[in-house]
Amino acid sequence: MSAAPPVDRARYLDASATAPLRQQARDAMLAVLDGDPANPSSVHGPGHRAKAAVDTARADIARAFGASPAEVVFTSGGTEANNLAILGLALANPRGRHLVTAPIEHPSVLESCRYLERVFGFELTLLAVDEHGRVDPADLAAELRDDTTLVSVGLANAEVGTVQALAEIAGAARARGALVHTDAVQAAASLPVRFVGGWPGPGIDAMTLASHKFGGRQGAGALLLRRGVEIEPLLHGGGQERGRRSGTENVAAIVGFAAAVRAQAEEGIGSRALALMESRDALIERVLSGVAGARLTGDPRERLPGHASFVIDGVSGESLLVALDAAGFAVSSGSACAAGKDEPSPALLAMGVPPDLARTAIRLTFAEPLDERGVDRVLAALRAEVLRAAALRSRR
Image (cartoon, rainbow, N blue to C red; front, side):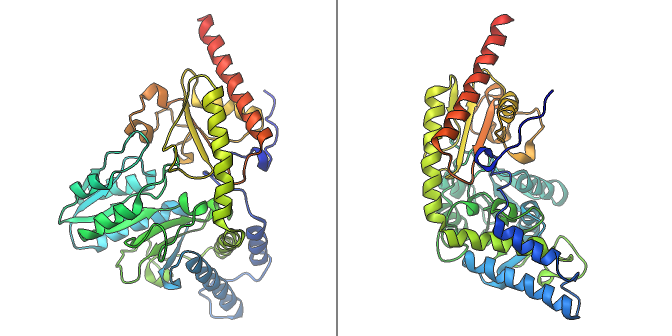
C-alpha cells in the first residue's frame, strides 16, 4: 500500500484533536529549550528565570480568561485537569456524595465520576440529552439535591460540537449550593470564553483548558479554580502550584501554552469565529445536499464555529477516514480519545442515534477557514467513498 500524501494545513481537518502549532508558541518554547537548564524550584539564577517564565505565563493565561494568577493551576493537559477538578473538588467538599454530569462528557470526566462512585461510594446521576446533545437546565434542576456535591457539564462537546447553555446550568446548580465544573477544552480555543466577567457567566468554580487546542503543544493544561474553593490534590510531593498539583513544571510547554493563548487574543477570537462559522456552514450545506445518506450530528446552530460532524448511512466512519486520509485530508471518526475502538460513540448513543448509524460518524474540524476549493475536495472524497461502499453492497 502506498503511503498517504503529506497533509498541509489547508487539509488538516482534525483541529479538535490537536490544533496546528502556532509559530508564536514554537518560538517561545525554543527560547526555553535553548536556554539554561533549570528547575523552577531551584534557588539559583537559572531557576529564578525559569520560575519567572512560568509566573509570566500564568499571569498571561489568567488575564486572557478574566481570572487571577492565583486561580491558575498548571497540569499536564486537559485529562489531568478534569481528573483534578472532579476528584479534587468532590473529595474536598464535605457537602455530600452526589455527582451530576452528562453521558456525552469526555471520558476523563465520566471515568473520574465512576471512580468516585466505585471506590468512594458517591452516587452518580447522568442527565438526559436531546437529539442534538443538549442538556436541559430544567432537567438538571430537577435532579439536584441537598447533598449534590458537584455538577460537571462541558461547555462544548468535542464529538458533535454542541455548545451548552452553561450559564443557565451553572445558575441552577449554584442556587442549590453545588459546585460547578466545566470542561472548556474545546470551546475556549474557538469562542470568547471568560472564567470571570463574561460568557458563560458567573457561577463557574472550575474550568479546564488544554494547550494543544490553542496551538501550543501537548503536555500542558490548566485548571482555573475559583479563589477560596478547596481542592484535594491528586499528586503529592514538592507542593508546586500552591500545593494543588505537585511535580516539576513543564516550563517549555507552559510558556508555549501562554504564547498560543496570547496570539489568539491578539488576532481577535470573535472575528476568527465568524470566519470559521461561514466556512463550517458552507461545508455542512454542501455535504447534506451532495452526499447520499448524510445527516448532521449536534446542534445545527449552537455549535463550535469550526466543527462539522456527520453520520453517513451505509458507509463506516473508519472507511471514510481512510479514504480522506488517502486524499490528503486528516479527519476523525469521533473523539480522538476513542480512536481505534470498534464500539459506537456513547455520546451519539445518548443522543438517540442507532448503534449501526453511530458507527458511521465522521468529524471535520478546522482551525483555519476552508476555502471553496477545499470544500469541493472534501465533498468529492466523501462522494467517492459512499459510491464505493454502495457498489460493494450491490455485489454481495
